[in-house]
Length: 117
Image 1 (cartoon, one colour):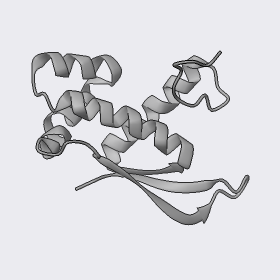
Image 2: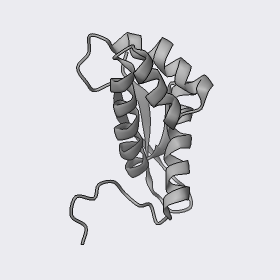
Image 3: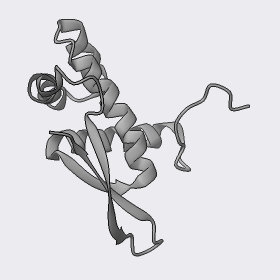
């Protein structure tokens, strides 16, 4: 049964799926926006918004929790540069913008995931 399970599987096993989402999250933090499929963007959005909410607490425990999930350099950027921008915001740190382009091989809808300013 699928009770209380959340998130998409993307036809991958647990390890590759976690690596995919971690890679998308890291690239979003580094570049500020990424282009990906709609379903991957939604799952990445869930993950990054949780991390920003933790980072907004601005204490040592929050930094350590982020460093458990992300590499040190990326965690520091999220904690010291990105999270302070959203201290007064109660949620909705990212947005998904639809594009008119589709992926060539399978015509999947592509979207842009970016931080809200």
